[in-house]
Image 1: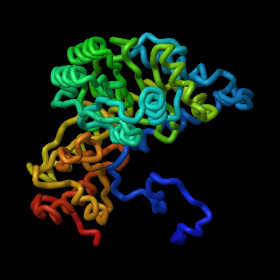
Image 2: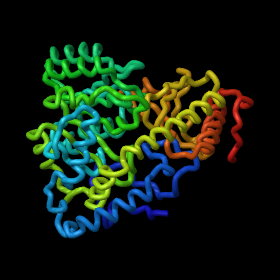
Image 3: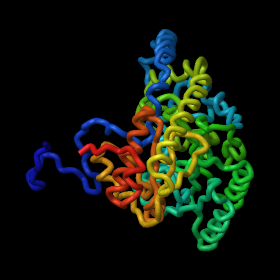
Image 4: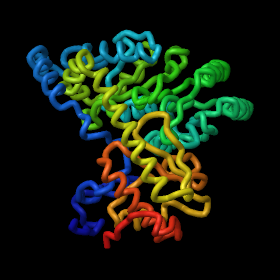
Length: 411
């Protein structure tokens, strides 16, 4: 255990406002339904190894130079590959419009650093990526939650919201949206709504911050990216974490050149991992499209297993919001249950999940909501983990009936 030091005599005197220290790492839980992990059985190990060998033979000399000697925007081969990939989302960009980041999280940090100051207003979807929400709050920005419905962002109510804000003298710095596989609800915004959103951005002079980290995991073809409809009004970020491997830490920002150069000037880390970039570039030019198809098929199967398990264990006690792609499922419990009450009893059974309040601009409005990431666990572990979650729910709330699930106590 860590020793407790007297703050008056401590050698290291840390600054104020820091988060709690990291807990001692004890490994992943048995039934891990949190975060954005992906399917370990669908990492293309052999293909990546071959890509790494080709990349090192071709470019190893450039490892002697920061940024591989290709400038702060990132490895040119990867930027070319990303630009070609984005063409499938309707975006017509060259490498000069693509800036490589260490995951999309760094993209969020750089955009926020360039645009936000304490007290600024930003619009996020009322249910949204917790990482984006937490980053904005830590910067002291004022968050306004835009309404969602079963089809994604309600752009008509958003228009009313923008009109009210502007009349009050408040012009938001941006509208952050996840239009393609919305996180956490899993919806896809229609093309009509996308076009209306672009009209609103232009009319009220509020840029759009588009997060498309999950777009390639859609189960059916999605409408064009917002950046394809209005490149001058959109900052677009993406990632290889959900389609290739989270641990690679590769993301990117796409924007107009004058915007991208201002954002890029804030990246001071000496460059994103060079070998990661080279390997990804090689693989994009080889087996990547087929890999994504295989991955999506596997995720569909795991989603079906998850839905079947939830329906079997919870019956009608839980409403399932069926996603249109991606790696997670959104659940609605009865209004009288605060899912945060399930955290400890579920953890004792080896189950961890994302409680809805962590994904909401107004946490109390999401207290009966829960997100489960189904990509990481094996299918048998999904079934067993959902059964244990149901047993924890019965322990706390009295439902579902114990006879309706196959949970075994881990006590």
